[in-house]
Length: 250
Image 1 (cartoon, rainbow, N blue to C red):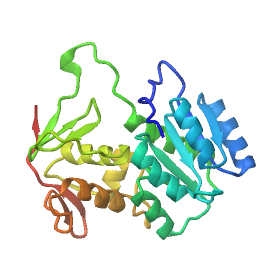
Image 2: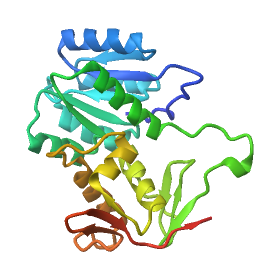
Image 3: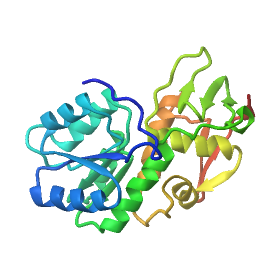
Image 4: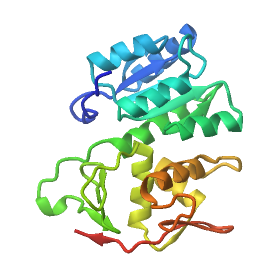
């Protein structure tokens, strides 16, 4: 499957939403609603059609059901994370905690259960697009966000990239990049789950919301020398998390 170009700026074209769901009533509702909100909407009833759309045109965000014919949404989300770098929101009637955790572990940027409120779903989509959109072109070079360095790694806010001490690329999903950027910009500060959720999603964590913990687990596996004994992203018992490295702007 080809990798689509980066999402288009919202000032030049409407955001393109791909809804992957085999329920025709759901796809009609989402197409009408998001179309009325200024989105361009495409639909796919299975993984085959999803890949056809992604191979032939740029897509800004995928909204994925789990219960699909053929490959299920979990398998397709895993495949997207390997071959496509845009954001994915799982929208499913399976609301059990284990399903949410699996979806987020596989790289989904958010997980919404059916039945959903259309206004909340719109807010979730816009939140994900805001944090994954390329930054607006600065009129002056000094206006551009500077790169951030820690332990030899370099985080580039403009390019949305992370490189290791030898310059090797460290691939991150959009959600992992957003989370790491929050940590790096608040180094040596204890951040609660609610604060992290507010920075990333614009909302507090619910009492059973483990999405931050799941994303931190994924991020640790990519940036910690020993993920089983994390030293960069430390758990602060009863409070939250702390990013311990010294950070420099370069």
